[in-house]
Image 1 (cartoon, rainbow, N blue to C red):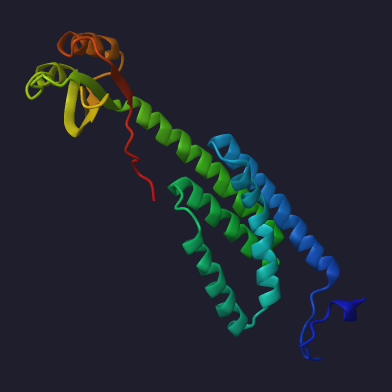
Image 2: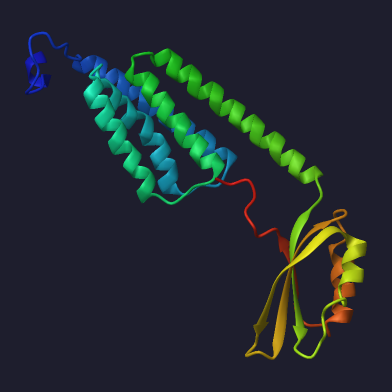
Length: 230
């Protein structure tokens, strides 16, 4: 049976991984990958494809490390092949990249044969990641609300200086980021990035702005510019 799993270019001096050891390592990597994917799905929204990738990635890395098995030349070739993946993938968020590195590291430890360390590492890092994400979300909720404000105005309204007195009362800071025409040029749409002085004043802010823009459309949304992403 052992001869069946020998490589074509192996010699008598080459050590062969036993099929039972191979299955044990891959099974442990799959179990750890499933745990990492479940913990990530509980802490953040993710697509089914990304969750499946997290579940399978430790097993893939585990097999690669076992097949390299101390061969420096093969290790360099594998590293070069994996680096090409970066140029064929869409940039992800910091949380997604951290989860991918976690899964790869767990698979690497499994491939080296330290199954208990791999499980301990995955569970410990996943739990710490959940804790940090909860703490970060709590700090963000306690901070000043950051919003994006869209105001529609008629084309004949000379808007500089019209809305600033209202924004000064309700916003700690604000910045006019965009002015564009809409509705075949008959209307203008102003976009502000602002930080409110406190939560709960959104309705009063919109009511005062409606008196200045002729009761046209006003939209106040969460900050649209992504912050803290890689």
